[in-house]
Length: 162
Length: 179
Image (cartoon, rainbow over all chains, first blue to last red; front, side, top):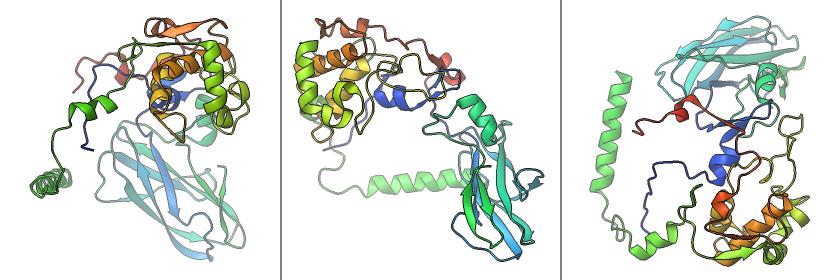
């Protein structure tokens, strides 16, 4: 079968356009269409199911935004109380994943580590509560709230809520 | 600079793809028969709907034979997407998104069923069966009466309950240049 493309001058409003790539909000209305990835990031190391020792760690991860270019990634190593700006590794390209890193000494106390990205349009990755306040709990495809990893006294890294 | 150089690399990669396209059957025009098989999209204004019709009563038997195993009796309690009910739930803590509570256009039912359902044999339902089962699903949602009949004229005229429940993103509000 030879591949072919069909072009239209208006939406077909197919099931995927209408029932999926729309974002139901807490107020019962839905954003149409939700095609962009919102500003997002995740720490990939240390991350879930790893086990770390007290001492030096280089926190690394990925950030991205469908609206533009990642300008800043901040990292909290105390569950979101204080934030420190991470270093972005070049190249940082529009609508592409940007790597970030931050040196960290873990003292061995239980904590949560979180990342928060900002893009060049000023979009800031929301915390989970802010996200739910706006979107409700029915986000299907485009969940972009801050991702937290919990670290217990034994150094076990697990998925937790921020 | 990174951006510029990656564009050039992309152009070179695309060029080499074209020049190495020597495989048999690659790049020939699609035949009218092939295009006809794919050209089945249905728009909200009804463009693309084929001639034919179907009634709610027949749709019930089509549904029970082809759909109920996954979507449950009466469009509820199945292992896959719920199709009926949920109207008035969208602003609650437990929104129930169904055809009746969420979908803005009834034409989407025909398009999706005809191209993609039933899951194990997509495209196997004929035009009459598709109109009929679409009518039955709308009937389950209280949108069509028991004796309703759907065709290419009546399906696009249905106003779905959540038709006005969507807020276009700024970039989709006023498209003046689709490029």
